[in-house]
Structures are given as C-alpha cells and as structure tokens.
Image 1 (tube, rainbow, N blue to C red):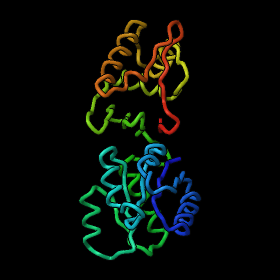
Image 2: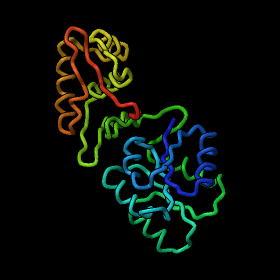
Image 3: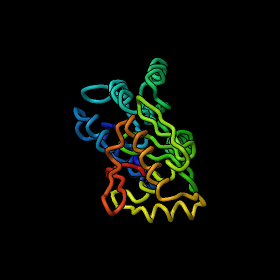
Image 4: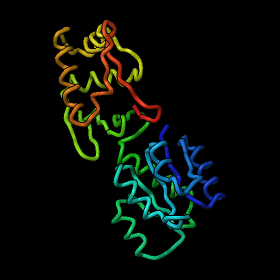
Length: 231
C-alpha cells in the first residue's frame, strides 16, 4: 500500500480526499499541527505528497522547499488561486503537478496514478523500486540512490540485498542465501558468498547504509529496516 501525505488545512476537504483515496487502497496520512509539517513528513516517509498552497503559519511553497532539501518524493500542489505565477513557482520548486480547486476527484486520481507509475514504475505485477532508510533502490538497474550519492551493485550483490530485505529484521542464514542463489541458477560457493557480502557492505558504506546489514555470528545476516521502509 503506497503512502500519501496530505497537507491540507480545510478539514472537510481533507477528510473527503482521505476517504476517497483510501477506497483506491492508498494509505493516506494528514497533518494536524502545521508547525510540525517536516516532523510529520519524516515520520510518515510518504511515496507522494499533496500540498495546499494556502496554509497556516507557512505556505505550501515553504514546505515544498523544505521537503526538496531532503527528498525527491513526488509532490502535487492544490490551490484555489488562479494566478499563473503560482503554477510557475510550484514547477520551479520541483513540484510534479498542480491542480486548481475545485477539481474533479477522477482528475486527482488520474494524476496520482500517472505520477506514481512514472516515478516508481509501479503496476499490479511488479514494483522493483524500494526505499530503505531514505535511499531508493532500483532492483532492475541494480542501483541505490540517496540525495547525495548513487552506487551500482553487481547482480549477485543486488540479489543478496534483495534477499535480506525480503526478510527485513529477520536473520537469513548463509545456507538460506546459498539455496536462494542456487535456485536462481547463480552458482556460488561459500567463499564467494562471503566475498559478495563484504563487497556489498563496502559499497553501502559509501552511503552510510552498511550499519544496517549485521552479521549474526553462527547464524547469518540481518537487514535492519524501519517500519515505514517500503522494502
């Protein structure tokens, strides 16, 4: 279930949007304290953000700037204003779309689906884009990206990482990894497994993620993930 953070101070409209999006199987989170928008964003770690321009305390442009300093998450602006400069400003700040109020709900859904397909290559059959401790993993291109860096993995390194993340916060034994690799026709010896895990850790160290792959002596390996990681 993909998560959406809805930043809207009109309570009635906010609840209506939340209810309608929930029927499309989106996990919608809202903001109650408009002083703490970034805290809410960090806690939710959404796949998409919808922001109204006119908000208490600071406007939507401010929060868009703040979000863009930390994340490339897709953003849709909502606005009851019809100034062309608002649309221009939102695009310049890195928004992915702009919808003027009042709007038809089918238009909002269509835009959300189009953006999610484009950004995450998401459909009913496959979703090879994962997020892990703020990094974006593309298991089709075997890359991991953060705001600052991008690293490339070999096929074996990517396979091992994917296997560990599929059992997040649970120990995966060396025998289990060997069996997974064998079934995938990746003929790999015990020593080669050690080499690949060490190389994977070295690459993850570049983006400060090596700490989240732990060795359990005599048991195997564990990938530590947070509750809101989409792995």
